[in-house]
Image (cartoon, one colour):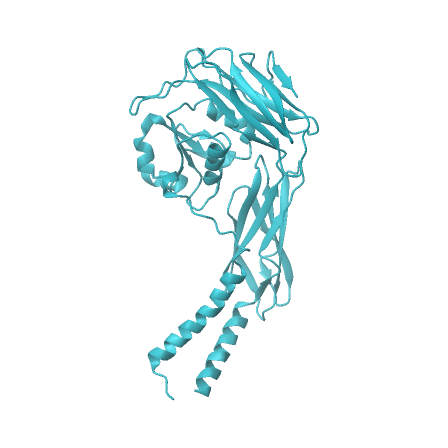
Length: 248
Length: 142
C-alpha cells in the first residue's frame, strides 16, 4: 500500500512540475483607457522556470481589432519576457473582452489563453440611436433619452439635425438626463437626418439617426429599396445645409 | 491489502481530476467565459439565403477583409468606424427586414458584438448572427 501511495505522489509531483515551465505573472489584465485614447495595451509577463527552452508556436488574437506580439520566439531556462496585446478601441463602447491564445512546444501546457478586458468610458448613453417613421405615418414626436455615463457629468447638450425636414427639442429631466423629442415635418417622402449630439464639456461628438422608411413588406414580396429621388444616407462628415438645433 | 487493477486506475483518474477542478475554481473569475449566443439569435447559411430579399447582410469584419471579398450585397458595419457606417446601413433598413451579421468564422466575436449593438442601441428587431460566419458562407457558395 505504501509503495502505491509513494509512486502516485511522485508521479503527481512530477506531472505538476513538468507542466509549470512557462510561468505567467497573470493571464488576465483589466485596462481602463482614458477618454480619447485610441489604443489600450496589455502586458502579459512570463518566466521560463523549467530546465529546457520553450518555443512559441503561435500567438493569435481573437479579434482583428487586437494585435498580439511576442518579444522573442524562444525563451531559455530562467529567461523572462512578455506578450504585448494592443487593442484598437475604434468606436467601441463599454466593456470589451478580447483573448490572445499562445501556443508553445511545452509538453504539458501547450496552449494558454490570455484575457484582455478594456473598460471604455462612455460619456453619453443614448437610447435609442435610431428613430423612424413609416411612410404615411403621423409625424408624431419620438423620444431619444440621453444620460451621462458613470463618472461623467453633463449640464448641457446640443442636438443638431443635418436636415431641416426634422425638428428636435431638448428637455432636461434632471440628474444629467435629457429627453430629445424628434419629429419630421411630414412623412410622405423617404428622408433621413443625422442628429449630431454634443455635450458642452466634451470634444467627442455622438450621433443618432432619424428616418422615414418604406412600409413593411409582406413575406415573399421583394422590398422597395428606395423611392425615386430619396436621399442617400447622411454621414457624420456631411455638413447640413440648413441645420436646425436645440440646446439645453 | 491488495488493490485490484481497475480500482487502482479509478483512484488515479479521481486524483488526476483534483488539479483540474482546483484550477477551474481558482480561475473562475479570471478567464472570460463567454455565454454562447442563444440559438434563437443564430441563423444558418441555408436559412438566411431562403429569406431572399427580406434579408440584409452585414459584414462585421475590418474594412480590408470586407474590401477583399464579401457576401454579394453585404454592407460593411464594424466597430472601427461605427458612427460613419451605421447611417449607411440604416438607410437600407426598413421594418420587416431581417438582419444577418457575420464575421470571419464561428470563433470570432465581431458579429456578436455588432448584432448586440444593433439590438440594444438602435433597437432593431430580427437581428441574427450567421452560424460559422464567412467561412460557412464560402463553403456553401464557392
